Each structure stands twice: as structure tokens, then as C-alpha cells.
Amino acid sequence: MTAPISWAEFERVELRVGTVLAVEDFPEARKPAWKLTVDFGPDIGVRRSSAQITVHYRKEDLLGRQVLGVLNFPPKQIGPFRSEVLVTGFADATGAIVLAVPERPVPNGARLI
Image (cartoon, rainbow, N blue to C red; front, side):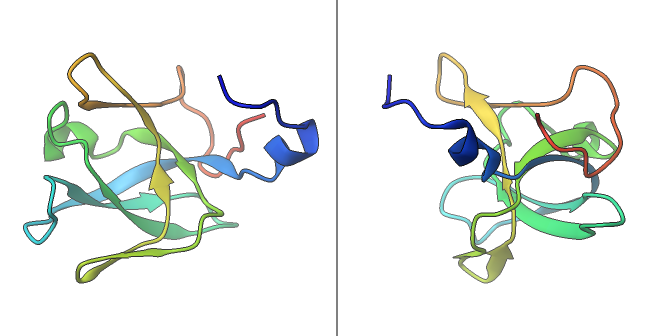
């Protein structure tokens, strides 16, 4: 386990829910990944992400699905693509990523509290 953080430090991490609007192939990625377009609601808008989630998720499985993203990381250039949000998940026993998602639908842009 890592060193404890304060509540104020946790509050600085902007974890919000968004709905996947589009999923595109990303053949230029070194590791298999999808390009996701995610709607984080009217106050935040649409953001894009490169997500290495191809083992468990087909494109059609992701459309309309809510995901949890970290919005306040700086954008990351991944080859020709600019990833603006980190979509979160957990590694399974083989290392493949399983998405972290809300149990029930919540409004896009809702913040993890």
C-alpha cells in the first residue's frame, strides 16, 4: 500500500462519469487500443481518450456505456492522437483491463465523491 493522502489531495482528482459516443480503431497504437469519444455532460463537454481495453470490449459493447474518467491529467500525445482523459479500470488476472463503471446510470459529468 502507498502512503496515505489527505481528503484535500483526493478532492483534487477529478473523477467523473461520461457516456461513450464513438469508438474508433487505433492501428497506430503500440498496444491494442480504441479511440473513445466520451460525453461528460454540458459543463465539461466531449473529451477523447485512448483506451487499452480491446481484450474485453468490442466497439459495439462500448457505445452508450458509461465510464469513469480522470479529467484533470494533462493531455497525452499518443502517436498521432491526443488523449484528453484517462478512462479508468482494473487489471484482471491476465493483465487485461476491466472498466471501472457506475453500478447504475448517473448524469454525465457526475463526480465521484
